[in-house]
Length: 329
Image (cartoon, rainbow, N blue to C red):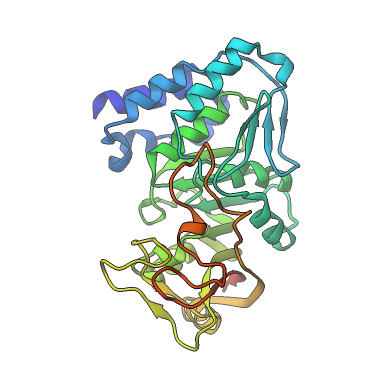
């Protein structure tokens, strides 16, 4: 455990991923790399650090987050051998769920074409610059890069899965000039927000995984400042009643699902937890183009669990992905 604690934070500092000013200003955030038990006790941390250490050492100032793919570095900045090593090592950090990323011309063709969801939420982002943003369950930080378009003071990703944090570090190695984004190892429930409150919280694809949905919304309210904004993206059913998934059973192949709410009950949940100005602003159906298996995520994906008519392999009726916006009272 001790080795993991030292190696990860030391790696971040030794590689110069952040400036000394950033380390000092947000020291309490970087401390999660030393205190989060789930992270520091993970058996693969040292192996992942070794993979990161083998990535080609290239300095670049090119980062473009304005298009669908997050582009870092120019192809001209890396030779053929370096490109081969880069791809090999990044593949060792698979599966890549969110993306795509393009590093020095090498495309990480992730399972999700995440820009499709981004294009659905972008119209509802606050227009204010210099705000503090939290992305709950941020995966490898794809949306944090996209949030740079809003010019935030800081955008913090809270992520429980250690591998996704390592994926973020793999891209951040080549995006040293960006100081406004950080992924920390923590669940939102364990995040200590005493030193920071947020103007905007994103919870995307998290609610239906929560065993206690009300507690999840209450936690969001806790870290939001008064009149702060919430963007909640989740699966919903068209049924008049929620879908309850029993322990040990699955929904669309996923066994960590508790409840699929309908639209009315999501709004009721938000209202009962102290939110106002609640709207369902978008509904969409995920297709096989938006979520699919690739070289970078070789496991089963959407088409293995959802029939073309939208019915799940377990026989549940078709469902939607919906975006809700709200403000804390």
